[in-house]
Length: 241
Length: 305
Image (cartoon, rainbow over all chains, first blue to last red; front, side, top):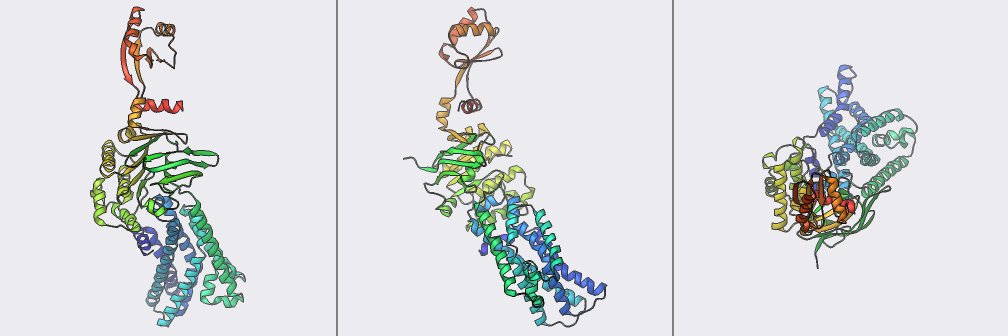
């Protein structure tokens, strides 16, 4: 599997999407930096990390993840490489698993980029209250939220296999990001699988009075359904040329 | 006993109500070049996709190297190289990097091998060029490089000469013949270009409307090509009267095209027919003894079947 991931990285060489996703990961800290410096919204590192994690997980990550998934899976159809890969031969299960794993690794990199750039922007803005523990806690929170969010994106894998064009993914991702903003703060937000990862990771879920187990169960069911339909579809469908 | 590398039994593929491939029984002998000939939409690509497990058959069986590929997938397909339609590679990667991805995943990455195959298909000077900047001919050659990189025992090539210039076609033809004759690689190649299949194949499978009409060796093909005599005459009506009196039947024994009569039977009597025409006052402007070409044979063969 290591070779698969290594080759997925080679496939990303000179790819604009990878660079764009990194820019997307820097965007929330950059916007917070602008808010702090240009609008004199002062504050401490703690507030910066909290705001960045919230905007990243609840809004930007949803859009970025949708685009990444669409690219990872869709490009094999759009560039007609699926027929080349599957006749190497690679089993369809292994191919699908390597893509899921690459998606997770990509998310890990984005998390690091967001956290490190938040730190850099915080120092650039001259914020107070930095401690290593704060940074590690914030990173862990963002990573946990992103990993939970990763689980909720398996239905998008099916969509990307079914509609290989990136446009629906971008529209879907943007739509979902807007829905997340509307849902956030509502009583039933913990039951929406794309909102609850942030609520769980940040601990905000306690304020809703909802069962955290139910939220975890919804995330898990979303993952299993998405995984099952993407696997069944990919396993059974003829490879389009 | 004949050793078949590819054997299919009643292989069919149905899309909705359309039978794209209809009960195909294909037999590709070890070490031979098998040309699959058919019009666009005849079912060649679908058949090859089923052989490569890219498309699932609706019914029928496939045996590769005598085994069921569903049960011995990895063992069988690691001995197969293929190109289906236009080769698919990553646009942002160079020729070398694309081959590296394939070799690494297959587990036999060796820079020397990649450089050798790139040299073999004349892409050694373009190995650092991105795939998106390749011409169609270069893409096809890279596809062939990828297909032969792991020294396969069987090559399945769907229209591999598409987009190649005449020099490129000749190079690939020489390469494929070399692979078959020197290294004993079995090749299944499809094309709708009849002359290419005639040039390269040892055995030809004729496919039309999803049906594999027949499989014949090239020697058998040449035996089956119709020979005929063409008479270009000044008075076609009078000439036809003469043929009718001799009880020769139009379409069976002869055909008419303008002022030309094409005689398919009684060829040994062509001098007597010529003398008869002259005696009856018909000027015979031309007499040719001809042989049907592959295109004419294919047209006749397909329409008869």
